[in-house]
Structures are given as structure tokens and as C-alpha cells.
Length: 444
Image (cartoon, rainbow, N blue to C red; front, side, top):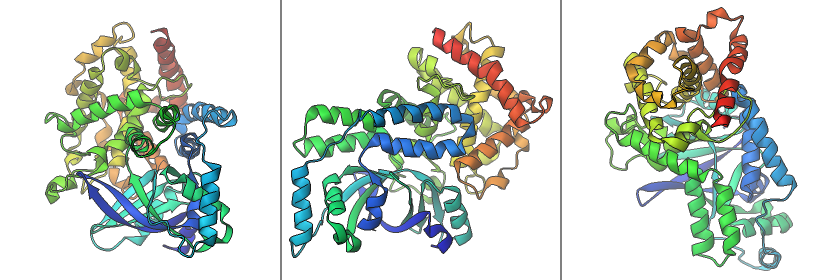
């Protein structure tokens, strides 16, 4: 790795392990680095992540400010505590300092957020890699070259969340110079959403160990604060992936992995992960009152008629597929990759809110059922003029936001030319639609 990025990321070689049709990764990480970047507290982990996201997602800054404030309040009140056993800690320190063979042959189990997953055919494109690392300074980068993997882990506080192994790490912290020349075997669960992490935590810490059950229920909730919403989104994304009328048919890596025996052509189209889609869609159904341009547009339907969400998403993305044939050419365009789909999901917020009031859905919300792909094709006119190639080298949340802005300015339905600039459009949109929708939703 080039010197200019060693200050922000640490490179680790990984082995991919396949079990039960799913995969995780194993790597060797120096203890002196690992100890500086891990946390055992999911609230602290989310707090640091959302601080980083706020910097790159200006259209959601109000939401993140509220969420960060809530997590800060929880941390200040010590409302969450994952305790450790002082006796066990002392035993480990003594073992590390005095034993002739102070080995930890079993692995630490952890998770962290991936900002970008880059695949190369044979040789790493160093320029593209460095650009991606620079744009994802707060998130990890996973690099894949011919079934060999490397991960670049951000050198920031609480960038890694521990699932199992906290006592060993606390012991290493207290063992002084021992950690200076000590490697850890680390199993990393990458690109899995919180419900999977919660299940792993529960299985390891309850089914395999004698731990206070009440604490475990609390921890499981903290590991997946939006478990009901995530469970629903699991089903939504499963339907999108398995319905042959869906533009996402066989396009999603369910639970983060591609089918082991898929053809090269089939695997080439697996450009999206279930975790990525959940991360973007969770804001559309999450109950929140942030005064942001981004609103929980599907919250009413989540509460009243969940599968209207599926129908709406299929109609919207079918329109995209019909307007832009490159949707089915992920090797040539970013449109159906995380960059493009992330921007399209952001645009969906604006499109939905404008349609919601122009179609009178505030008086008859079930009218959403009549909105088919041909209707969206008319509303999206102009998006075909966007040059997606301009963003082919990007991957950060900030770049996704830039692509979203270019799309909105190109779509005639939004009439951006009637405003002084894009910020003027967004400020007026928030006043005319977003805050109005927030008040409507609160009345239901």
C-alpha cells in the first residue's frame, strides 16, 4: 500500500472460508493495531459510523444529527454496558506475561463496515485502489484478485465491532509490552446486516457459554436495534431477488455471498448485496422525525400494507431498466452496482414525495397500487442524459450524492431550472414536500 494511505488504513491479507453455502474471512492482525480500533459496544460502533456518514451525506445530516445525539445520550448514561469479568482479565494478563507459550490459537470474531468491494481480474489497478481508499477514509475496502482477498481497515476509533473475544483483548491491553509483538487470528464477518450479527452473537455467547440471559437479550437488541424492520427487509429483498418479473432477479448476493457454483455470466450480474440494500432501505421505513429532506416514505405501508413496498420498488426499477438498457450490463456501467443503485434509491425519496402530493395520496394512500412502470418512465424522463461513466471510478457516499444531484438536475419532472441552484431546489423541496409529509405521517 502506498505511504500516503498508510496513515488512514491498515492492509490485511485474508483467506475466504466457506461454510454452509456462506462465507467469512480469516486474517492475521497485529494486536497493537487491533487494540486501537476495536469496540465491544454496538452503540459506540454505530456512533462512530454515523459521524463518518454524516460528513458524506448532507441530504441526511438532520437524521444523523438526531441519531448521533440519541446514541451520545445512551453512552453518557451508561445505558448499555457489556461487562467483562475482572478475575478472567487478571488470569489472561498473568498467562500472557508468565507462560512460556502464551498462545491464543482460537480466533477473535468481529465485524466491520465495507465502504467498497473492488474486484480485479489479475493485477490490482493501484490508481483506482488509492482513489477508493482516499474516498472511503472512514470505512474498510475489500479487494479481490482471482480469489485472493485483502482488506484495508480504517485507522479510526471503534471501526471494528467485537462479537467474541473481548476478554483476550482486554488482557492484551493490560499485558503491556506483550502486545507489541503479538499477532491475532481474526475471523471477520463482512457485508452481513445486523440481524445476522445478532444471531451470531447470541449463538456464541448463549448457546456455547454460560452468560446471563437477560444481558444477552439486551445485547442482541443493541446489535440489531431495528430487528423488526430488518426482518421485513430480508423478505422484501428475497422477493426482489427471486421474482422473475423483478429487475433484481438473481442480481443480489443474499447474505453477502454469491452462489458457489454459479456460472461466470451469472456471477457477473451479482453486483449488489442484501446488506447494502437493507442499509439504504432501512431509512425508508424507520420511525423518525428528523427535519431532513429524506423521509421514511414507506413507513405508512410498513405499518399497514407491507407488500405495497415490494410492488412500488419493482415498478420503479423496472422503469429504470426500460429507460436505461445498461442496467443489464454491469461490466460496462455502474448503473446496477452499488454506486448507481444507491443514487437511485436516494432519488426515489424525492420522486415518491412529489408524486404523493400531486396524486393526492395523502387522502388515499392505497392509490400507490396504481403506479406502474409506464407511469414512472414518464416521470423519469431526462435521466437517460446522465453520463454514468463520469462516476465509474468513485465509490464513496459523497460520490453517490454527487450522482444523485446530477440525476435530479437531469430529470425534467423536478424542474430544477426554475431554481437558483441545486441547494435552492433542495431547500424548497424540503419545505414543500418533506416536512409536509412528516406532519402527515405523524397524524396517522
